[in-house]
Length: 359
Image (cartoon, rainbow, N blue to C red):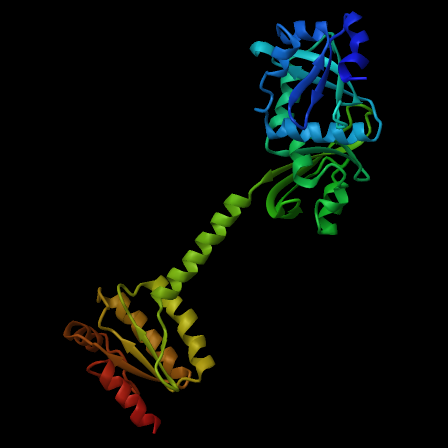
């Protein structure tokens, strides 16, 4: 018998009944009451209606329902439909039915929900369609409820213990049940799509169905923001490296062109990178090329003097090049100690001096 022949008796009932093929997203069959509910002139017209434009939340919900139907369950859920743009909230009882081609679809029997609270329906639909993952957990980690976003992220059958790899974090979340405390952290979570970063908040609450202590868990995907932050940090480190371009010029010789201003932050950055490089490379000579040094004032000369002294204290010989007349006068006026410092005309002379002293 065909599907239509098997379900013909349902045309006599005054309850809307239809068969929805969620795989192809079409109405495979409906009775007369369902035609009236959906505002369709005929079964052919309802079959031709476009049900493909649905949200990710609806698709995730279909997957969960289909999984339960495949196990022989009868699923009871409340749905809000929008035939011709008008909201209709129905209690739907769904069971599996075999189509003519052997595939399984949903046989839906619907009845109007009585005493529907509009605010409650809106709240439920908001939780279903939000991109944030929301779950209600028992104190032992049993999943009492999870919205479609959580199902899409972790899968229908995945227990809470598999959501977060760090057992200490899992324990901290479960400890909020009945305590009134709030757990809040941003961390890496392994999802069906791979590693993602989430802002996680868990707080103790009560199960509205039983009154038992429970945990409300909210997870917001922060992967994009986290990756942007990491990219900015990498860029910052690259800029820092470019602002202190330490060059290795042969065995035992380092060169550092000082370009731009030499303020306190720049001097600290130079010390952080140049001094460890001297130790690591076992440098004997450090060429400080001052040709590109822009502002020459008491502060910049004092910072330069400290860098020279630090280089000398590490056993390397400072070689200065590109010293302009203005800088020379300022160093004399400030009585900068140049003992052990060799001042040369340019980088070429400094390299020759380093080679000569090396030999």
